[in-house]
Structures are given as structure tokens and as C-alpha cells.
Length: 418
Image (cartoon, rainbow, N blue to C red; front, side, top):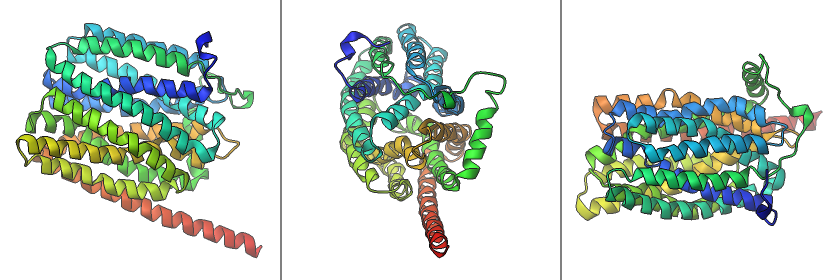
């Protein structure tokens, strides 16, 4: 599966390349809701469904993690990756919301394979004490590329009524090279951990998830507290594009600079910083601090809405710069936290699949909650409610951090008395 020209690059080098290429893919995906509202005239409910598709598809990671577990994942990643490539190439003929929805739906259901593949490569090729550093370096490079492409994309979309067609074509080509790189990295097979497709395949993963959560109370508590952050984040998903287009009346270029360029430029600095902090902290303590900061983003957006002219643009860029710093921490925690809970003899893909599947659970109702509050009370009130939920998530992490610390202390005391 590996082209000869990739022989000279290490597994981590190829992972870097994949992440860089898919930063361009993710850059265009940030414009999905805005294109829907601004150019395809989608209604708020359609936009909400579009924001829900990625988290809902994450539930499939329950099976994805098992299908990759114990296998050399190269063939699976290649074939699922080619589906992604062909889907984005079809965007060259995009003319309506339903086609756009289908593109994002296919991308959403295939993405868990790529996410879990990255986690398995990091686990097998990088020492646990250096995963934060390697992760931070890789995503800093990718964010710079994504920031540049986001700025260009916003400008390009303002130049013509259907210029998104050429952008999707470009993304499809870029995705092809990224998939070739990722699918060339061999992962160690383990026959004892391989899952085979059968009638039991659908139900067994759910039973194993319940067993894992019963056995690992610390992991269950962490996921429960993390769920609150996810609710706050997903409540914002339908609110933000409506707020930017309907309340602030922004052009594609301004939205692209804010949501893409400023956001990702800050993440270039933020992800290595949080990767460094992650290596020296615990997922619970770091989550508590990051989620507390998260409440500032919707508040900053609300304040920006009271400004006009250049001051409004400055407020917008500051808001998304702050969000970039916050999401640098969330991004690091989201990708690496499961590795701290998986023991050395366990496949991190199983833990990560639970982590990703939880995204689908909150994605089934949180965007609707945000939409309902928006329709009843307006975008500003909805953003304020999201800020409050961010605070609750931080408080929950502080609580379980103290609880797990006390539990660990009691266990050490019991062992010493024995």
C-alpha cells in the first residue's frame, strides 16, 4: 500500500503529512454552515442538522475501534479514505443544500477511522511521555497551512456565487495525498485482539463499553464530566453561523479570517503549549482550567455584537483568537486523554472509540437545545446559556479530580496497612 517515494519518511513523518493535508480539508469544512446559510439559503433547522451530522456519526466509532483493533490498519484506511476523496471531488458539481449535506455526512461517518488510526500510530510509535510534544508539533504545522487556506477560501468565496465548487475539487485532490500517506503506516497486528464481523458484531461493542465503564470508574467519571463540555460546545454549533450571518451581517472573507485564519494561527502556538502542559498534568486538572476559559468565548461574541465598523471586526478577531487558544487545550485533551487511561497492554483504540462515541450521544440533542433557545430567546441569550454550561463542565472536572485523588490516596493507605 505504500508508494516507494514514502520509504524515506518515518511513520511519524507520514502522520505529520496526513495531518497537514487534512488541515486543508477541515478548513473548507468550517465554511459548510456559512455556505448553507449565506449562499444556499438554508433555514435554521437545516443548519442544525448539518452541524449535528459529524457528532452523530461519531457513535459509529464504537464499531470502528473494534474493526481496527489488533489489525494492520493500512487497507482499511486506504479504502475508507478513497470514499472521502471521491465525496469531496463530487463537490465540483455542488448546487444545493442536500448535496452539501451528503458530502458532510459521508465525511462524518468515515472520519472516525482516520482519528482512531492516528491514535494507534501515536501509541505504537511514540513513548507515552512524548505524545503531547509530538501531537503539538504536528498540529502546529497543520494549523499554519489551514490558516492560510482559510483566508484564501474566504476571499475566493466572495469573488463568485459558486466558487465553492473549485474549492471542493481542490480539497478532494489534497485529501487523496493525505490518505496515501496515512494508509502507508503499518500498525502492529495482534491476532488475540482482532474482531471479526458476525451477528454479534453489532451488540458486542456495546457490552464491552459497559464492561469497560463499570471496570474503570475513573474513566467513566471523566467521560461524564467531559460530556458537559461537549454539550456547551455543540449548543454553539447552530448559533454561531446564524449569529455571524444574521446578526453581524459578515462577508465570507471576514468569517474566513476569524473562524479559520485567526483561530488556527492562535492554535499554532496553543497546541504545542497545551501539549507541553498535558505531559506534565492530568486530563482532569487541565480540563477544569480549559473549560473555565471556554465560557469567555460566547461572552466575547455577545460583546462583539454591540460594536460597529472596524471595532466589530477587531472584537470578532479577538473572540476567535480566544476561542483558538481554548480549543487548543480541548483539542489536545480530546485526542490524548484516552491514552492516559489505557494501560500498556490495552489497545487505546477501544478507549478512544468510547470517547468519540460519547460525542455522538451529546450530538443527538445539544444542537437542538441551542437552536431551541435561539428561536425562543435569540442568539445572545443562547450564547450566554452556553457560557454557563462551560462553567458547569469546569466545576464537574474539579469535583472528579478531587474525588479520584481521594480514592487513590485511600487505596495506597489500604495497601500499606496490608
